[in-house]
Image (cartoon, rainbow, N blue to C red):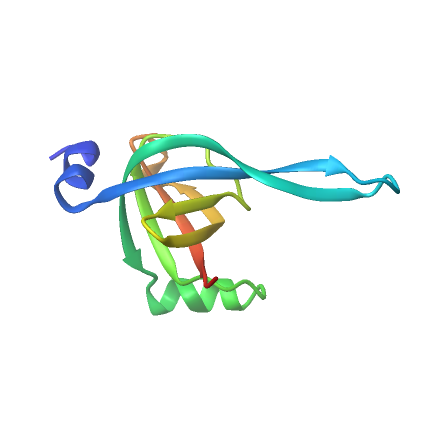
Amino acid sequence: MNPAAFIRRIGTTADLMRATVTRGAAGGRVAGTPQLVKSDLEVSAQPASAITIEQYQRRGIAVTHRIYVAGDVGAQEGDTLAIGARRLVVRGIRNVAGMGHMWELDCAEVLS
């Protein structure tokens, strides 16, 4: 089964958002309103494994979920995935097997 079919079978949809950065009155950087990068991405969200969580904790980074996507969706560290009412911040990106067919996005859920 190809990765896209696998994700469609067990997955859900998500929106990928990226925060804009503007200059404030004093010239400093100010986070702006997040802009939609891609919508209706087919994803599969899974809790992060204990090994993954430990590897990120060694670097002082919190991770709660691993998100699988078919193909390169253009995600960057710091982007936000909206899955329903849930918000997950991308902390790491990995091209599984280096073939570009499936990507893993390691994320931390943000409670609002």
